[in-house]
Image 1: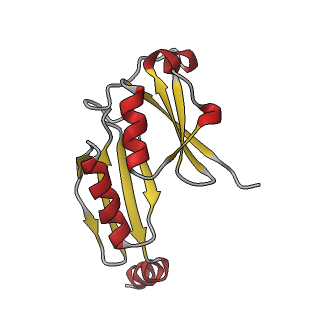
Image 2: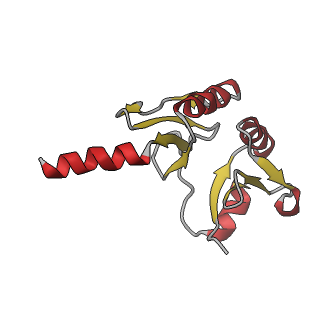
Length: 143
């Protein structure tokens, strides 16, 4: 069985956050969703658990970071093409997210952009041509 990842994110407005992630293409898993949490499925192995602040506090004694003011984590998802990177950014901005809080990355063999969700969590979307990346890295080490 492949390993699964569940990214737990504190959210201020659960219904708004659910709508945002559904606009990106994530599917809500009703089995693990209630008025305090929602499981948003990106793939068979990638899930985002959206937790109200009250629910999130049950799992940690630490203060909840204000992701609009501090960086707590950078989450990166792969894309199948450069066009998918741009399409995901378009979906995020049309759903209320903020595009490109950091610099766009374009190395030819790798292309990435980022967005902030309504709570300020930064998500990166990245496409890479693995063969071209290995070739470029091999050329750099040979020099």
